[in-house]
Amino acid sequence: MPSDFEPITLTGSAEEDVSLLDIIDHVLNAGVVIHGSLVISVAGVDLVYVGLNVVLTSVETALRNLKAPEAAESKIERRTRP
Amino acid sequence: MSRLLAYCGFLQDEKITLPNTGVNGRPIEVLVHGALRFLWSEVEWPFQQAELQQSALNFHRVIQHVFQQTAVVPFRLLSLFDDLAALENFAAENEESFVADLERLREYVQMESVVYIIAPRIPADADSGRAYLQQKAAAIRLSGEHAAEVKGAVNGLSREVHVREVKTGSRIFALVKRGDEDRFRKAVETVPVKEPLSRRISGPWPAAEFLSEAVKTPQVASPR
Image (tube, rainbow over all chains, first blue to last red; front, top):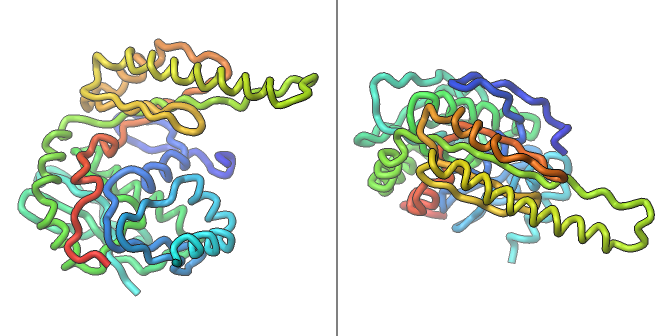
């Protein structure tokens, strides 16, 4: 899975290589989660419009979704529809 | 359809420079609420799949631009507000907790050391999964021991350390003074990495792991 990504270089106080996987992990999994409205979109289609207490997709799920949007769509819809 | 994508919050400081553009080349806007500043862009929604990876990078770069100058509270990518009024309500409702966290974390950054377990090799003569499971159990134990050693090594230069066991090993988060990143790396590197473990040190990151619960999962005025 990590081999899909090219390492990139960020410039900062301590220059270092940071893999795209690290970045995706942080932008998806670290920080404020807004309770309320959140849309997860894959392949240009709104797949879910989730209500309260949503937890953003994990890195693994995000990467899987990037590779198999159709499979992800059916899985997410099944999970969110009563 | 357009939505408002929030990048991060930070405390007002006239010396801070801002990036011009963010995700999908959209202009960066600033919401001012007391001492708080929120960066946001109006974006077309939904994102296209082909743009998702680039959007993640651009989102990260906006946050990084500000974080290199001061403490930030990052929003997660794909967290959207319907419009500016919704973000203004959000700022008003959560001002106190955001300001408290930003002041508490003002001088700090988050460093990480992740220990991965490299998949154990199955012996050629193995006739069951027993050997594999034994190796895996030993690797998990080793990963836990390594995390405890790293925690001990960085405790002296960290205000706080969190250890999280994950499926692939252990993840250590340390809240260290801005400028102490190299000391952190050197302290971690004093702990040897034994087979079948592998280690990756990263940072500095915004101190998202050390945000208060009130900021991690804040109030929203009009949830859908």
